[in-house]
Length: 124
Figure (cartoon, rainbow, N blue to C red):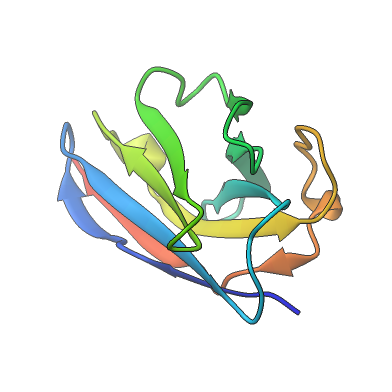
């Protein structure tokens, strides 16, 4: 069993930056694919970015490409989402998710483990 805990959310002005963390406990992240999703009020939970545990492969949604970066530290069992040039459209609850399946999986149904979410609010 994997437990995921996100942190780092908060209120930021447009143009600012935040760094979200996703820490795993219960077992190592080793071999797991990790994704960040977000859900705005009244909208679906959509993928933001994905990183294979090897770190070699990453995926970003078009809406965040060039602004967001996913990274991981296997020794710390932690994955980060660096978010730059934030806009009000990025306001959402951000979730990290994990699956032992390999490959870049963009559908939320592929992920067995989820964190509780962290709120990101970008003011204009």
